[in-house]
Length: 473
Image 1 (tube, helix red, strand yellow):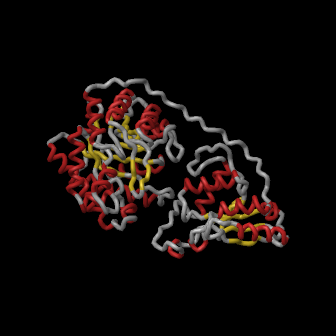
Image 2 (spheres, one colour):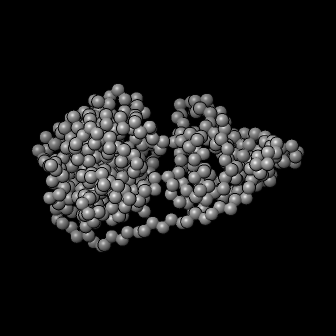
Image 3 (cartoon, rainbow, N blue to C red):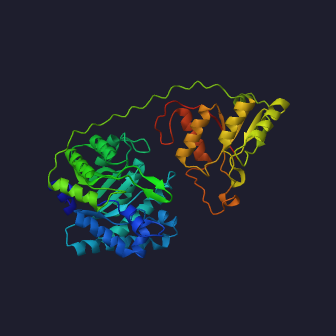
């Protein structure tokens, strides 16, 4: 038997959802470790924000629990508050509904784990089940699994929820402007998979703004699948330590709502950066049955075919293949921007004939130095000796690592040694935390993927690289 929420989706006009609670809470409540902590430290602010979206016309509000699973809370030293944060999040949403007197659905918000290297399936299942049980036990009307960029993780989360709850599920993924997830899954494939799982609704949230969400929606249309679109206002940027979203006028969101409705969306709302003003505009657009100003043009994604690499073998690769004895001398990059001494050392080694290669460290002892990649480029270009730059994922996120590698390849560097790197606390900034999106093994996977013509998520790049990769053990 369908729930009241599912009957509303089937029989009524599009349901208007709320906007970017997390971003607004972060602005309204200073010095909190994460938006979910506001449930305990500033409950009145959370209720006020819920109420402001209800006044703007939202019929569906989400609990302030997006990142309230045990693993993510542990990153803020809040894992012991798991039950209180989730239960209070539901209570505050219910309180806002009671104060408003409006007939509003409450969705228990569950986000992804937010990690590139996910935990073991059993642990992931436990984390999702734990949060889902807490949210259902406090009285939500449905569960919203949102902002997932990995389809496999979303499918696993849906299955975990289904094991402990019969509540309707809204499943949302984030897509780029070409209708692809970060893991390279098309919106069409996501819709097919989610439709087979029988979710109450599926669609796009967060993403690169309304246009990206509409592109994804156009690809997700399937008979019997209710669609949802809850985009942010556009790509965010940093101003100091603050996250800034571009200004998107209410009228822009009213037009977005009209376009989304034309594409068959049954739930329309917002995500990061959207305020009650944008939600009110969506409400007006739905109530007035606004006609879209122009038909949507959906761009087809065209990936350049990765050309088959015919790499020239590096001298290091040749010597190791032929089991010749290879000698490499390790150099540290300079602490400043002057590479004269480094170049002189490289030239001396080449002229001595006693060293075949130069190893170049990457910020050894976690001290800030010239980039090991750039130092290697300088040595190869000035001295004519092959280098083996070290590369650590300690200081750089995945996108930055890929950028460094692509730049090094374009400059002629072909050898790379993947290393874990010295602990940050040993260096000049003991309070700093390592990035470590991946470890040295994950970095090796990145390099091997680039050699295949793919980025970390399996999406094609213009042309494959031809690195000879090693790992420090």
